[in-house]
Amino acid sequence: MNLSSFPRTAIGLTLGMIGLSVTGCAHWGSQTSSPTIQGSATDQTQTETGTKRTDAEDRLWSQLQQAETHYFVLMRHALAPGTGDPPNFELEDCSTQRNLSEEGRMQARRTGEAFQQRNIEVDQVLSSRRLRRNQIPAPATTVGQWCRCLDTAKLMDLGPVKPFPPLNSFFRDRSTQSEQTAAVRQLMREQEETPGVTVMVTHFVNISALSGSGVSSGEMVVIAVNPENQLEVVGRIDPF
Image (tube, rainbow, N blue to C red; front, side):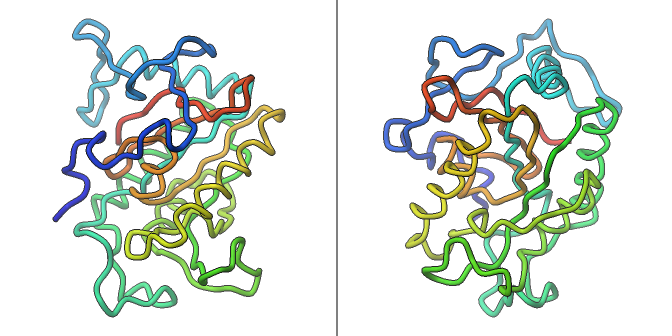
């Protein structure tokens, strides 16, 4: 079963449970029931890759350019055929994992180029990393990566990639979901007063827990902390 085929709201956590408010515009305004930015039929533009972009996405890119607050771009790793990982996968051995396809590698490069072409200054790039039970954050000596996330982050070429254990997948074991999600929220709140852009390359389940909805491979959800110290979805950027 491919999770990316599920409706976004079907497996997302309820917003009330995760304390998330949602907006689809540049300002901290009234809440809306959906975090997705929708473009009308008249405000779409065609890109070189054939993907239709909306004026809403263009406005979101402008916000990232200006970075008047700290924006966190949560990106699901690029295309990697399958679901989860093989039964015998090892985080220290990429050959045992579900990895990016050639199209996924191209998608990651295109995404990085989109940031570069728009002159988005990225302060840091964080990626999924091995996490041992009851160790959040994991010690510096912990090794291993979910290679599809690390490869996506590296291929985007937006700067050095820093492993951040709370971004690890809890698809198989939900026992650390609350702790990991809380750790990511805490990081966001600690940086709210410092304008900038942080890119986080992670997994479907992590983004769903943070944003209340699912994402397709390579899709990005942009989150900021509003004046009420709540996480707020600013908008979404479709895969490249």
